[in-house]
Amino acid sequence: MQRRTIAQVACLLPGMLLAAVVSLPGVARAADPFLDAIQQEVHAVELDTRNQKSITGRPVPGEAPRSAATTAAPAEPVTADMPADMTREEFDAYLRQRYFGSYAFYRKLGRRRQNQIYRAYSKRPDIRFVREQIKQIYLNP
Image (cartoon, rainbow, N blue to C red; front, top):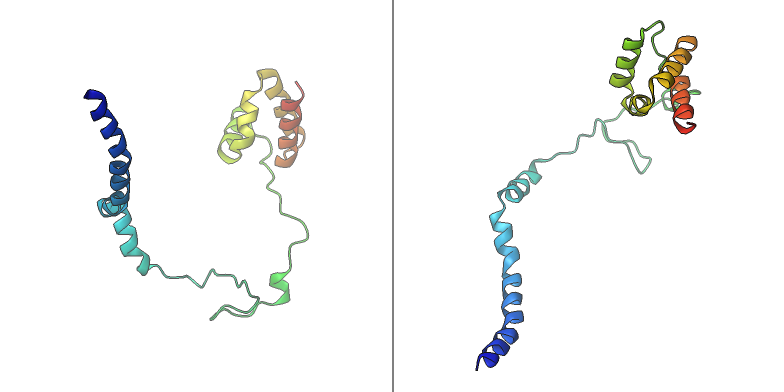
């Protein structure tokens, strides 16, 4: 008799689970106040056309036409040169604050290799050069 009861429960179980899953989304949606708040606020969102770029090539309403001088790309990107004559501590802090990605690799190097990079900076205080030195020294043990 016990086997018969287990078989009946096994047959009814998928149907019960299906009924529970079908009824769940409505309950879950109503129970989430965060989603309700987002749905209420979505109608208050407005497009800021001051920063909008036209995808179609037509001017954005209210935007002044651009002259050829303002739309031309710069010939060469502006570089951010490093301050010259920093002490070793200042150099470390500068890298950590302004170029954390480069600093992450720099700090993994041993003291001797860090000194090597600091000496390269002393000769040429250019961040592109310093980054290249960090990369070369890090990749070539």
